[in-house]
Length: 73
Image (cartoon, rainbow, N blue to C red; front, side, top):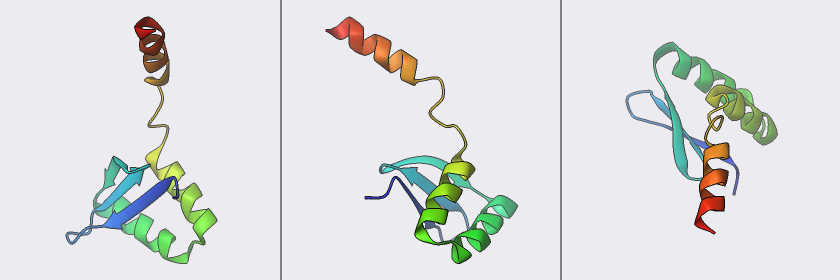
């Protein structure tokens, strides 16, 4: 399974998932630009493109999850 996946919706939006969870939905010009770049990309390039487009979506919650896990033990 690849880390990132995307699906182009009927209305032109692009839904990007990471490990099966939707992390961002691109609309308008951003979606059109992404689709054009994705058509020309290899699988490895596509994964890098998807990572770049989603940004740093995980930032901020890893520490909270780690601290909560410590408290539960």
